[in-house]
Image (cartoon, rainbow, N blue to C red; front, side):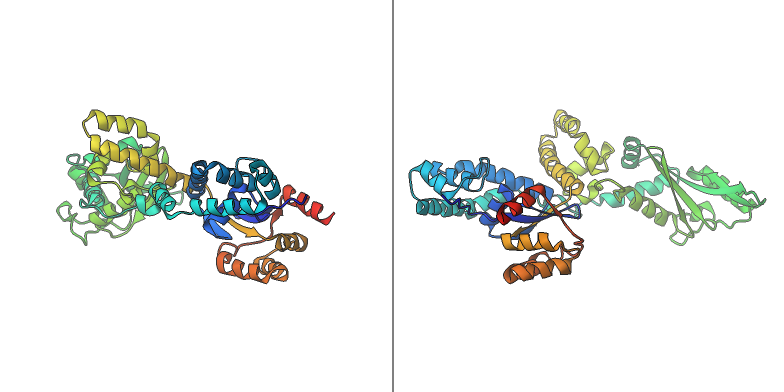
Length: 400
């Protein structure tokens, strides 16, 4: 008896800028049928959420619907033909088709989309730059005081520097070079340190304004100022010329809150003012450190009586973990490919997007139009694909 399978057989996947022609997976086939799409791009978290959603929703189908979907798509079971499923259920193939349609309708029910939306990760849920309290401005003002040598009322910046093993210092250089030339080098902090530095600068014949004028916007100190920022032993030097103290502090603040090589600064995320202040007081500035220390942070909040902030923090960390996973893993783009197109692509072995489109159009113009509408941007860097062993085996079986 002929084996009738409803799902399409092949898919082109793009992952980490590599393209694969493969036999379609049960998940991809079911996703295409439920959402009515032939091409889509999913983030790492979206793909995982959809898989979990299918697992949960299929279990909520009645026995016959669940049997049809699981066996027809090979989802959690070996793939079986319509006739085989009909025999198991003691019915005919027409009833299997009816059960498939009703099951897919239930899987795409709007109520299930509401269920999905409640648990779906969205960048809008976690990223935010609007706060009632200007924490970024507070860090700038503390940096200004710190760079001027003040040690009081700068709790945030001191805690951040301590926890993240960061040091910040301003220097001028007066170093004897191999050719006998000299450049000035000294570090300064506090009023006395600045006074001494200005005297040394004048002795070195570099102009400098008096200390009492150092906070004016137009203040200049010498020709070039260097700020050295060190984190975990890695030193970076930033040179400034003719900037006021306020401007230097702003530049340093931008460096510290820019996120660096990590996943971002917590000031850019959706955290309430109250919780943000508590985290900054403990020196937390970067999102990855919140996730790494999440258990201890939660315990500290609870033990200190901040139950509401602890609950908010726990929910935020769940989303932050997903956010980091999406940043760490490449998204998945897939296009469901009809058999004739897949065979033609395999035979032609296209090496760029235009050749891929030519192969698709030669086999199925409707599919080629879909590819242009839905996947042109994602496939712009197409430079050939890898045909999986599973796909090659299917091609050989069909030829034979």
